[in-house]
Length: 80
Image (tube, rainbow, N blue to C red; front, side):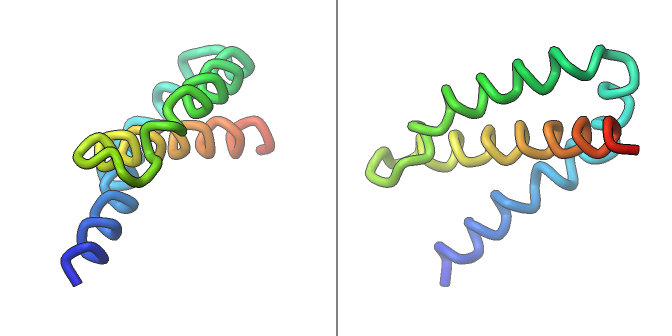
């Protein structure tokens, strides 16, 4: 049960912390470099979220979800 609670918190925390500011960053920075840089950051951080690394898994997963939130905000701003 505790593992599910931690996983839920890790997946919702970036939405709660980054969502209010993601649109501001996306509007002020050029969008194409944001998408390229975040793709590279997510690829570099992906090995951190592999099981078996202990506390690094939580930090890596939180970092990945945060990068995904900013990536999704940029993608939706480019579409609209």
